[in-house]
Image 1 (tube, one colour):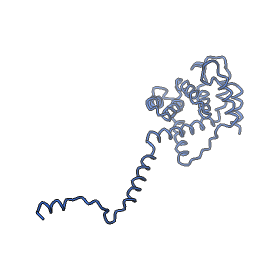
Image 2 (tube, rainbow, N blue to C red; image 1 turned 45 degrees about the horizontal axis):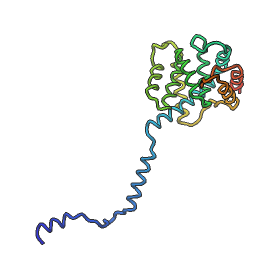
Image 3 (cartoon, helix red, strand yellow; image 1 turned 60 degrees about the vertical axis):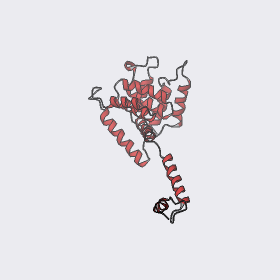
Image 4 (tube, one colour; image 1 turned 135 degrees about the vertical axis):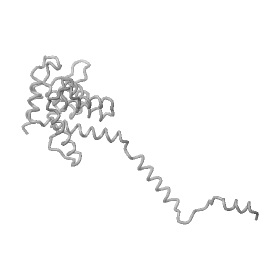
Length: 223
């Protein structure tokens, strides 16, 4: 055998199984790794899910505030008045929006949050931030977060402490999976559905709450 033949023989790639290497095990490991990568949720999906959970917690917390029913009561007392910042109980609009969100009327909730946020209510802007984040609408989410943190809105407003409380509650619920804030009852859901089916014309937004809903919310508060 010549020197060249010896070199070629040494460079030959072996085709048979190597000692200690299990092809079947290796293939199964590759399949498992590939499945794990495929099943791993995208970071944006995780962030949206967390925002949705946090928003539900915040909405329940707002709905369970001691004066929530009183504000919705005031909102319902002027049914013929055009909806706007000058004819609006802003806190009532926030509570009503949270109730709409918790009963799966999300477009209407966004409308009422925007009314409250437009009047300078930071908690409503925070809800809008979470709402858009849950939908994956990061540009809109950043806009409303800016409204929450912008001191020019109303530097003396009490919402700073309120939002810090909401953050603490949301963090607690995320870690423990529990909340002392009650979800809307079936009676409240029925009243919201009644208002939703009474929409006039082509309007898809649930209009101002009426006294019947306000009374039901008072019952909810006394439980």
